[in-house]
Image (tube, rainbow, N blue to C red; front, side):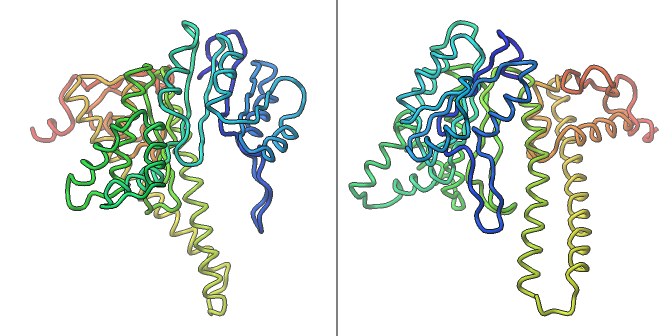
Length: 377
């Protein structure tokens, strides 16, 4: 999306690059980090677009390893130092080419104002998108200091670091107010409110609208991070949400296999054969997925009906977050198709068509009598 316009060269600037690839640990195989993914993608795209990577890494040992991953071909660059120091240089190197800025820090790091200046200071017409890992857990933990009756000297430094990341101390009042809003308000909920205001401020200052994916350890756990896309391109959230939904499906399957492995270890001496337990687990997972999908379709249908009553018609690409509602990053295009087709069969909306793409279509209400109205006669 970032490179859909421009000179044919796109820059991926990874400000917290890490070692590039993560070594195998125990039974876990080696895993590609974001720099390796960018380099592999650049090789695959070379016939159509020149993807150039700029990787900034503070730890010298990681930077050295990163250089071996990136290579010395000249298409990609490694900087050893702080993101705040090298980001301006990286942005200047990109000139007016499209840029995807990836920010995946540990905890709270890059100052918000520097992020905004990076976007707004680019040449007129230059396309910039930002993928930011907003650390909900860190903000909730730091916010807990505000609720404590005593503040230690090291706490003052921690709070100032959070102020810099979030663009001032405004978040302190917002966090406290969210915690005190009702008896059940948690630190995580307060941190999510801070994230919402942060996203709105970035939009107000840059015009980049945000959509995020909650990252959890388990399905029932509170989010640790919000992987947040800031974009001006109206169709990007649609595709981002769709890809996130597929990733979430794989993640649920991973958790199923992990739980099965733990159960087999726990009951290794039981009379139930492992293959039988595995079959039961797969069957239960399929049933659970089917129930989830039915719930998502019902939710999407309700949202479409309510939004049509409010707006009259829905441009899919620009209304996708509202259409998905609470199913966002869980449901995807196939669930939207089911909801749309069911509403069409019920004569609530006009049918969708095969062309153009779904994201380019508009959902409109059915003009004639609905099936419900026909039955009532």
